[in-house]
Image 1 (tube, rainbow, N blue to C red):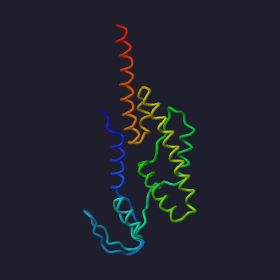
Image 2 (image 1 turned 60 degrees about the horizontal axis):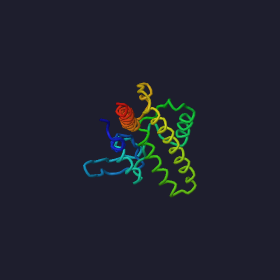
Image 3 (image 1 turned 90 degrees about the vertical axis):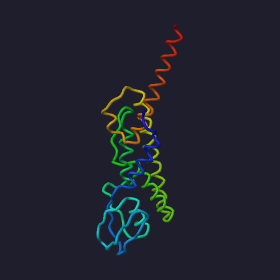
Image 4 (image 1 turned 45 degrees about the vertical axis):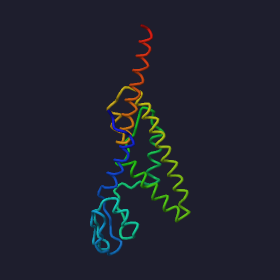
Length: 189
């Protein structure tokens, strides 16, 4: 039995929030005690490795900024959108690692920033539209793939969240097909 797709999304977010990222201290700061974790002290200009959720709190407090190796931005979303748009319904491109948690984080941060700086509202709306289009296009492909015989090569390009949805749909569609054909055979006898 395949795992619930929504549980997989929550699990992916949990893993993403707890992965280690690099931060660079914006200023000196003493040791900070958080529930279950101790961070710091920090020296201005020095690089540290902390969990992502801690890094976000340090960023909010102005203590440090996050150094993400593969940041998600409008240019990256445009590239992904273009690639997804030109591919056939049976072809799925690979996405950057942790794409969906990064996307949710990017949209959340861009929204917060655009509320403070109204000139960035257009960027947030564009990112929302691109994200929606990418998700819709990939969803259509996943549904199409789940209705077809399995292809290991195609499945390799799905994210773990998409693979969970694919497995769920594949199982349900297979059960439905079996039920439809079985009912037809039962009616003949």
